[in-house]
Image 1 (cartoon, rainbow, N blue to C red):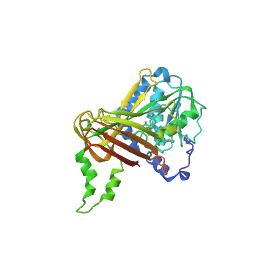
Image 2 (cartoon, protein in one colour; image 1 turned 180 degrees about the horizontal axis):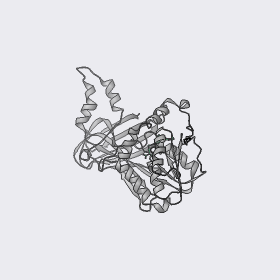
Image 3 (cartoon, helix red, strand yellow; image 1 turned 120 degrees about the vertical axis):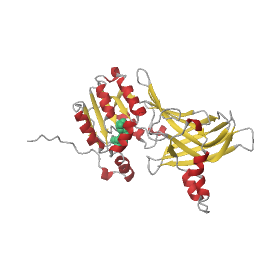
Image 4 (tube, rainbow, N blue to C red; image 1 turned 135 degrees about the horizontal axis):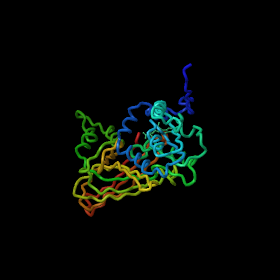
Length: 344
Ligand code: SAH
């Protein structure tokens, strides 16, 4: 008789989930999204380096891979000497992960559980290390960090490690007149008609796109840093000040944001950035067009506040607000504005 491997049913029931949650997990079912992430070498090699260069931390440890996808991070951990790895994912990609783990001869070292991290039962009461790739656009879009923090509080041993454990959001001002005209100015006159209601909508949607370094007009600034060892879910709704200093005389059409990630628990910390000054990542940058065009001179400052919180109806979406004041001695150029955005 042919041997059958029994695959346990998923621990979480999709039919009982909110529509937005079903949509979220279904988006990870297809291999295409995983292909994009695996091919993002800045991302995947940073995780690989952080794990392989710290075999002394992984040796004989129990590791939890939160949102394991195709199980790449789980397999890195096994190669680094982990005693056992538990990979959890709600999406059906985990079925493929099981096959991948099997063909790589690691089935005895990796337990894969299909279900929501918050609902599955782990075979170990606690773990030594959590690994997870949870970052979304603008770092926090998708709110997956909530899940990692939940897993930390429930399963991570006292003194346990989180890979990665530090994330910082940066901002800068950019010159982007041509594209802003194409995307926003377009609605001023559509075949002779005033389409300004759509202009407001266009302005309220942050654009995920690659920004060339030469478009960056101000110095970059770090706006908020999260330490995953200590941060609480409520801290992910933040209101932080920023101060952008113009590097040259130019126009500012938009503010952009990106994030840096650090594996500070490593023997020698490993970092990567998703900024415009460095190699492409699939997170690109996030562009926030502002209502005004600021005519800045070198050394002048744009100061303000960046506010972000999960949307009340769908907590995976973000409500973002940028308040800005362009500080200049010249009263004809001084500008104050406030823009709100929804990332969905
Ligand atoms: N670790 C993989 C995949 C990262 S993408 C890699 O690095 O390539 C994030 C994965 O987390 C997705 O597959 C998604 O389905 C899963 N995920 C997100 N939130 C989850 C939750 N609450 N419970 C289980 N899986 C989750």
